[in-house]
Length: 249
Image (tube, rainbow, N blue to C red; front, side, top):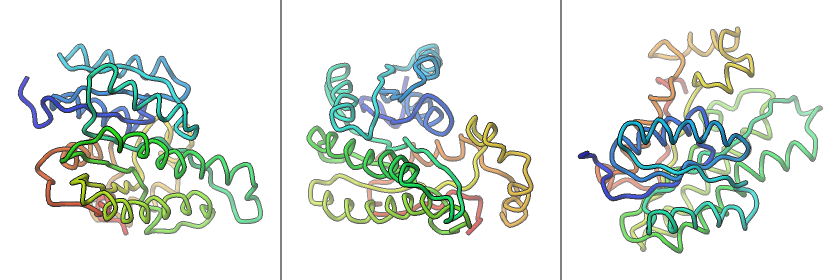
């Protein structure tokens, strides 16, 4: 199977469904061996691996909570144990809650920052030890950091932090020839946005009206950008934020 990522090994966090699952499938289709990480849904991750292997790709499901240092390290160690190396890290694990400022709680703040920001840092910290030249870190941010919608102070705060960290790590890891970029999706139709009531809502209709390309995103729209950033095609790009929103800004 000839692909852009033949011989490469990737870890995708939070890959049991949605955008993470699509990225894992697309990386594998291009020849990468993929660690499909999940926090709670082993069944979801197993399903993603089954799809990958049915198409002749390589994948393994690995549980772990990115916000705990030992578990973040365990996810990365699984790549080394199974495939002997690591070239690509997709920091996709994330949670979101929307609430007006009056309803923000310590618990909600820490949950979102622990997974969305600390988790990204801990997983990256574990991965950097194993990366060689040409490795690629792909952070999944969000269009909210640019659009700053009401009732999202904490969530948008986490994604603003991801943008900033991407810039810092691009400079810090550049001398090692490790690239760091962020994809910031707009509204994407996933299991999460469907069950969260976003798809089909007035909020979605408003966003589509403001989107030059006139529709909600699909997981494949994001996954193909991730393949590009994982591959040598994007070898001269680092520290970039890709606003993957169909033009909504």
